[in-house]
Every structure is written in structure tokens, then in C-alpha cells.
Length: 203
Image (tube, rainbow, N blue to C red; front, side, top):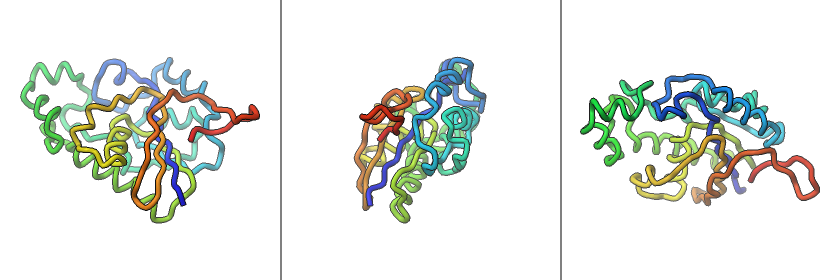
């Protein structure tokens, strides 16, 4: 059976706008409005999961996925002492550490989690769906989780993580069976419609 997974990145909050490592803040007004406008993009009853962060939970609720199951396996990368700080602030005080983090996927100079460990964690969750595969899964997850999932699905080198852009409130589709995945790149999320005009769901 083919498993289809749609990964939805959260709408904007202040941390995303400020290029700040997330400190678990809520969606901003514009992000909440955009997410609410996309409600109905997914049919009711689709198995759904959510990263534990506030902005992902808020996005899932606005989309009508109020029964999405929080999953620690889908948490964003733990950023240690950099949490809540902007990238510019960290670069100004820890330039060498930032350079190492951006070039070595196994490095965790902030004292949190390396990008390689993030990819291994997210990849294990993704592959576990093949064990008892539902036909379709939706997960509202942090942008770095989307990147890690795509790198894993393509069996790409971990350095490819930084070559992937994930825009707020976009959907990335993965489909596969027996450990092999195909990727449909991210697209803006909005209520979809079937050919006959009835509400449908992204693939």
C-alpha cells in the first residue's frame, strides 16, 4: 500500500519573521488569519500529527486539525542556548560556532541537537509509517522537520538540508512504499477543490 504524507509548515509567528530560533511563541495576527483562511484543506478523519511547538499547534487548530496528535519525534531541532535568539545575535557573539553549525551536520555547538540527529529522528518516524501504513497522513511540523524529512526521503547527503527552502504555510507531499519515497515540493496551502468543484485535499 502506498502511504501519502503531507507535511505542512506553520504559519508565521514573530520568531519566523525575525529569523529567531523559536521560543514557542504563538502565531502572529497575519499568520493566524492565513491559517484560518486555509481551513478545510484536508478532509475530516485523516490521521494527523503535529510538532509540539505552539505555532504548529495553533496552525493545526486553525486548519481544523484539532485532533492532531502531538509527536515528540516531530519536534523541531533542539537549539540549546541559542533558543529565542536571532541568528544575527548568535553570529555576532559565536561566529565560529555558527560557521561550524552551518557546515557540519554532526555539530551541535549550541548544546542541543545536531542536524544529523534531527534527520535520523524524523526519518525513523517517516519510515515507521510503512509498518502499519494508513493511506494518508497529515502532519503540521516545523520547517526544519520538513527539510529533514525531504533529505531522508531522497537519501540525500545531510549537507543538502540548507539547500531547501520551506515557506510558511506550505505543503510538501511524500508518497512511497517499502522504504522508497517520492517528493512533491512545497506549495502554498489553501482549501483545494476536486474537479467537480467539491472541497478536496492536497496530495
